[in-house]
Amino acid sequence: MSPSLTGGNDTSITSPIPQEIDHTKPMKEKSSSTPSLSSDRSSANSLSSTMNAAATSSKNNLDSNHTPANETSETAATTATSSRAHTPITSGTSLSSVSTSSHRPTDEDSPILSPANDDDDDDHAANAPRSYYYLTPLAVRNLPSYQYHGADISLLYQRVLSPLAGWLVDRATPSWLAPNAITLLGLAWMATSYAIVWWHCPGLYEANDRVAGALRGSGDGSDVGDVPRWIFLFNGVAMLAYQTLDNMDGKQARKTRSSSPLGLLFDHGCDAVNSILGSANWMAAMAMVPGSLDRWMGGGGHEFETPPSAVSAAFGGDEVLAALLVFCPMIAFYVSTWEQYYTGKLILPPFNGPSEGLVLGASLSILSFLYGPMIWQSTSLVDTALDACRPVVGSSLQSWKGTVRNMDLIVLSSVLALLQEISLKIRFVLRTHGAHTLRTLLPH
View 1 (cartoon, rainbow, N blue to C red):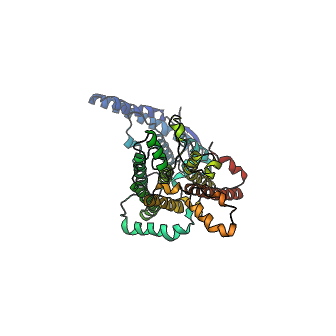
View 2 (cartoon, helix red, strand yellow):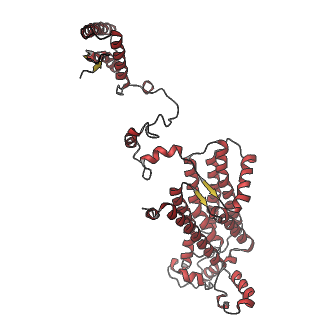
View 3 (tube, rainbow, N blue to C red):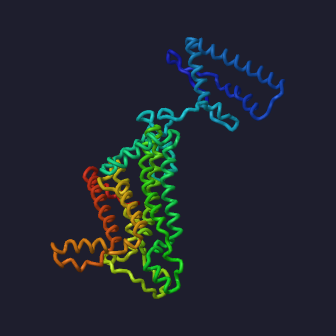
């Protein structure tokens, strides 16, 4: 196929440039084998003769059509340059000859990151990677320019936790320390604490003295109940360390100007993993029995003298309470991310899990270290409150004495905090973005 050149007078001229194919033959031969010197001379003479003939023919055609010679040469040079620019890459072509740019792709360089103009949007979307499950081509193109927007309006965070993290970043954190390393260090604290608790309480109930006594009496648990209290102190310290480091990583990223969508994803991923670790450690610190031990042990007829719990009976058993402790922080985190999907901001309410929740959880573990895990199985808090209110309410509520454990109050507070947080977030998204957003509230 012969390319056509357009002269200054809009006259179409047929060019004999097909001989350019012969011009590439020596290059292909050179890539496959090394020719002899005589072969090179013969090829060079043949190429020279062909080019002279092509030039003479081109000049004659140009003269017959009265086309300026300089204009034709400029057009021919442009066509030759275009031909070289669109030469396909073969197996013999080195990568260094194709691209010599070593800078990081920008919006102007990459057709995937940003469109050059409105007409090319479809082409750019078509060229985007298709291996992503959740990200659309448009999301892939906008990902490098993503900016995190969030706020924690908790007074505890604003007055205590954030200033403490800022002071540690400014005074005690070197600039060479990566923010992701700080995030990983916080998760390592919680993973270590979980491993220690699991070693001593693999079933999470081993710190329960009533269960330990019953198992010892039946000869099924000679090593149950010998749980050292210091593991709960370590868990409380680990939670506070994790919380502080989690507040420091973002400040370190801004200090070193290394914020990125990947850092945000890594941070929130570690937060999601930590939620299950913290819940398991809380259950062990409260000597919780997450289910029916008699059923777990094959129906051996064990009699565990545990105080009746009105809350446990209302929810369907301690196994349901254990599930609530696990899923409450997960659901709150999920709904917060769902809200961020529509609003572009992650706003934590005045009372939230990352601030007040972790402080209360650490305090729970420290109290278990000081007074023993069985303090949460007693009914002392509600019983004391009922005795204090007896002159006011009389004896109408005395039937509740001995039926609400301290552990039940922890579970109820977690459920109420979850309902308060997700109701506010769902109502805000519905009011600002419409009822159709409910279709994406559940995973699908």
